[in-house]
Amino acid sequence: MKGLFNKRSQKTDEMSTVSFNIDDRIPKHIAIIMDGNGRWAQKKFMPRVAGHKEGMNTVKKITKRASQIGVKVLSLYAFSTENWKRPDDEVSFLMQLPVDFFDTFVPELMEQNVRVQVIGFIDQLPKHTRNAVEKAIKDTENNTGMVLNFALNYGGRSELIEASKAIAKKVKSGELDIDDITESVFEDCLMTHALNEYQNVDFMIRTSGEERISNFMLWQNAYSEFYFSQALWPDFNEQALEQSIAIYQKRHRRFGGL
Image 1 (tube, rainbow, N blue to C red):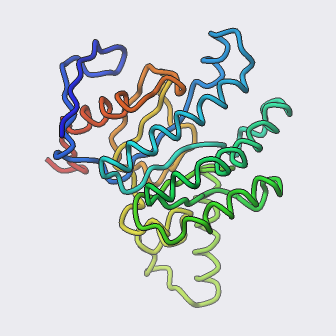
Image 2 (cartoon, one colour; image 1 turned 30 degrees about the vertical axis):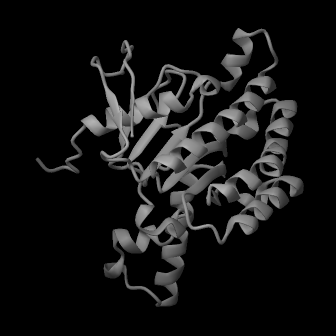
């Protein structure tokens, strides 16, 4: 099965006609910074929260398509440790979104055999948000297909600090010798350790035209390919996902070699 499309490239987009091939290299772990919800709403003279609500519909579309084409892990940056700085009413709406999202989408996730996982400081979330997250994880724990990995109250630097503390405790207790600290040992202390062989990101997408990583999966993105889409997140559809992957398929990943 092939999906064909053409695109006039802008900014960092690659100036060529690209075609998505489902039989070609599909990135095993895709991470997405879902940016542009507020701007999407403002352009339509709607409140910012309307953009976040529409963005959840995009999550559903992208999750289904990613699962269908063989992606193993889809990590979505839903709420960062810095997002608490936003206005209280917007934060309250964002904390309710997982409740509404999982309430309506878990049955479809079950049909798609998708398993929910969450990284971040979950214990600091409001009780109703935490309960919804834990229930979704429990309801889908036996699914064996793609992992839908939400980053909620997540920050890459904080994750690395917590991993370093865990390593330091093991060294202090004598459980681990300093010379035995390896990348593998460190990765076992990261929030993504349950992803096992798919822990590191193959392909990182950011929507809305912004070109920064915003404290997202700093370790896991060390050798990922980056793609910056001009589309605002609510406008990022299945075709846009395929288009992004087609560009990934044209690249040669060298991991520091030739």
